[in-house]
Image 1: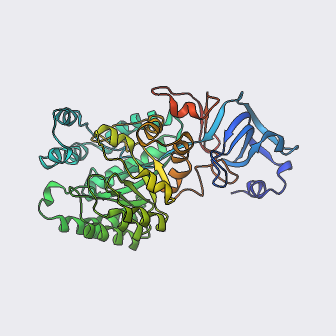
Image 2: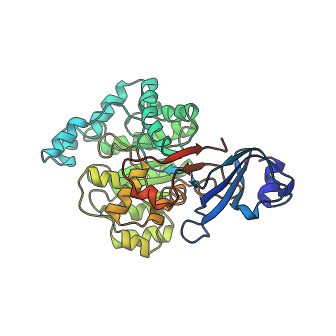
Image 3: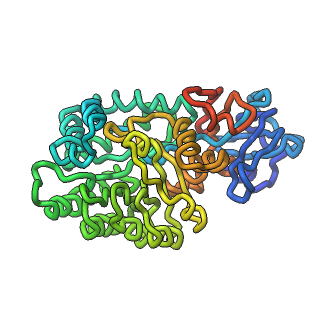
Amino acid sequence: MSAEVQSAVAGRGVGALRCDRLWRHARIATLAAHSDGLGEIEDGAIASCEGQIVFAGASQDLPGKLEASEIIDCGGRLITPGLIDCHTHLVYAGDRAQEFERRLSGESYESIARSGGGIASTVAATRAASEAQLVSAALLRLDALLAEGVTTIEIKSGYGLSLVHERKQLMAARAIAGRRDVDVLATFLGAHALPAEYAGRPDDYIHEVCEVMIPTLAGEGLIDAVDAFCESIGFTLAQTRRVFEAAAAHRLRVKLHAEQLSNSSGAELAAEYRALSADHLEHLDEAGVHALARAGTAAVLLPGAFYFMRETKLPPIERLRACGVPMALATDCNPGTSPLTSLLLVMNMGATLYRLTVDECLIRVTRAAARALGRQDRVGTLQCGKSCDLAIWNVRRPAELVYRIGYNPLFSRVWRGR
């Protein structure tokens, strides 16, 4: 951060600052953590310098001597923070449309998985693909998200299930960050499923994950966090604990797929390790809710998977809300259970399926999603010192972003002030 930006952020000498860009005549939803609701400002302005916000507030509070190289008149449009998709499996090959047909005929996800379908089928396709092919396919999915105002995204591995192929997935995620204007966080999900070559030997595979994959990939700088699938068709609590211990040894934060198909007490384990998030949570119990609340671990809700899998058991939204557990929403973009690339649709699903309010839906794809990624100090709100990531919408009311289905009102997307 330059001295000029430091001065502006600290509020010293702002009047003498020449900014890169100034957005004026906008309705702003700052999502600032100290604000009630969305922190709306009827006639607001945002100024950026070197990619960071140096002013976000009412137009009447703009410093009189503030100068900008470029001034953008927003014409009363709504500005929110850039959207954040905090749970995706964006890098993969192939599709699972045939399995979708099988489920429509009455087969369960567990039955398909145990017969060689599910994650295993995507693993085979992903292993057969080159890194370039994975990047090309993922960019198509990413572009759909960017077109709806996404500026930060998490991408998990977990379809390689061997060192060489997990590395390939993670390198593809890093390559994507160089091909588009977006922040990408790469999460290692080696403990996603048991690969065929380790059939009947799950502990041996977890040893490979903990003693070979995590140390190697962390040493190569390819991992931002570590995730696992703690479930009846995934890995046990004891095996997940080993993964978390290996992550901690390399100073990596953890996340967890928990309580999606059954209650395995995974959320309590995640809370014990102060995980960034526990995700899915349809079968979360009271003890799990309180554990998450005590740890400050975010609950990431994934209505796309809930809808696509035709689930009927809702996450305990009221208990999570009552206990103050921060909740986020995400697409869970993946080929088997949530082939979804629209955070706008996720917000509508959050409202219609989970009965979240408009304010809650917007908070959950901005401020709360940033927290679920451990990036709340950088993105998720419109505040001085944070990255100037904006979504400018052709709407007057925030409710329009949640209310409409299949309609994209994005006017402009700004990433790091550009």
